[in-house]
Image (cartoon, rainbow, N blue to C red; front, side):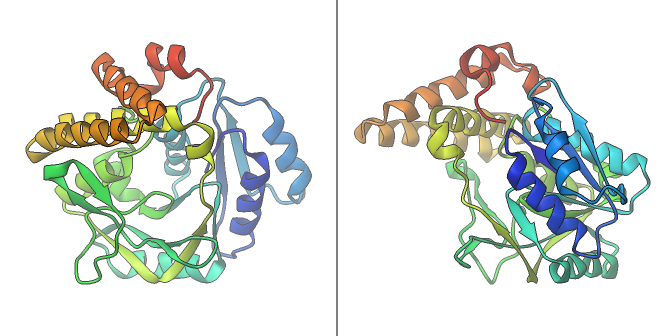
Amino acid sequence: MLNWKDSARTLRCVVSLLGSGRVDHVFVVDNESSGDLRGVLEAGLLPDKVTWSLVELAENRGFAGGVNVALQQALDEGYDAILAINNDAVVDGRSASLLIDTLAADVTLGMTAPRILNPDGSEESAGGFLVPSLGISTHTSRTMSAPDFITWACVLVRSDALRDVGLLDEQFFMYWEDVDMSFRLRANGWGFRVCRDATATHEVSTNRASYPVAIKAYHTWSAIVFARKHGGAWWGGSRMWIGLSAVANLVRMRSGALRGLHAGILLSREGSIPAYESELRDRKFGRALS
């Protein structure tokens, strides 16, 4: 689990996981740590059961860079499967059990995920679908089709699959790393599946309202990195998406979105690997968003 200046929701998520009866240990990574999270966790969790651990990072490594620290810890500890979950999501014990049983029943599966629900019970995602010619992804449900990718808001991953294909690609600061992972798993013969009977509730993120320029920049940056990496129709599709997005935001006079779009293009040209070491990102956004 990754935290970025959101100790209360991280504590809530850790408590729910440890109370599920199916989670042995929670590995928490605190991006750009202030030290506050450790005190919150120590005060809010039972001191007689050390079933969690915390890594405090001085820098902001984004999503892929931060989550990878916890994934590697779990792999080093020898766990057979690892649940990656956003700190603003909650999964109950029944759903955790269903995910474990789904992965155990099919050795060809590299990962499985629950349906992601909004707090009002409506469906946020039951797997994602792609339109390469337009450079876009969508979570609009297509019940007759297998998903092209599954979101990492909550996902159970087989450790052997991670050892085979590697961790999340740290060329991505945030966004599109989940699509890339699905591509890599499928290319190496691993399947993935949404367990429709399992659910996780995911709060509506406030980041879009709080950091609209950064959000647009990071999405654009990652979309271009993905297109460059996978090529084919994606390269032309990403240019199509950038053009349409620029026109739409110009017509609607959304200057922040246009600034974010331009910043994302510049970030992609910088080509920082890993993405969190980008000097341009640090200059433009500094501490804005993990």
